[in-house]
Length: 131
Image (cartoon, rainbow, N blue to C red; front, side, top):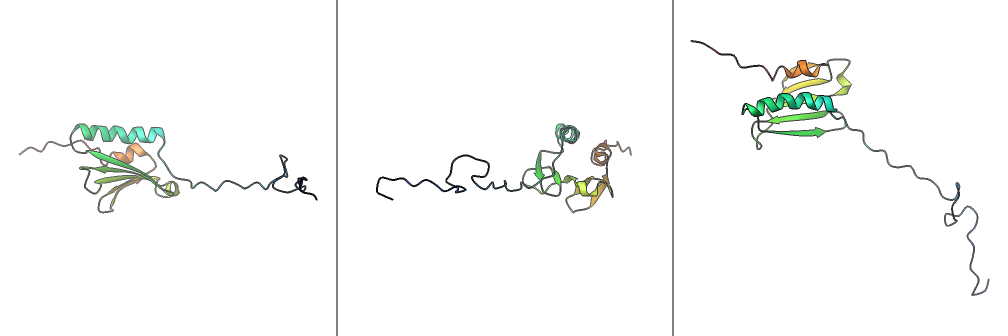
């Protein structure tokens, strides 16, 4: 090979042009799957949340989408711990129900597969007490 000669890449080399077997194809890294609320579930939760905000009971919320569950946290004030957590855990759908309402202490108030029925535990109307 002299100075002016250009070496051609060998067949099968990664430097070679286009072709189906020209370079190894690497798969994309697996994206972690996360549990989330769908549109109708969020609408149901936000309807209850909106009523309580209008009444002045609640002021803030947070959404967390984890690998095993989705959490809608409800706060009275921004700097506090959440009063309630509405959790969706699909692994429990056949056992106890995918939805649950949990208070700040960790006590589960209600659990079930029907989100509207589960949310009734925190959306109870106030009762008038007479003397």
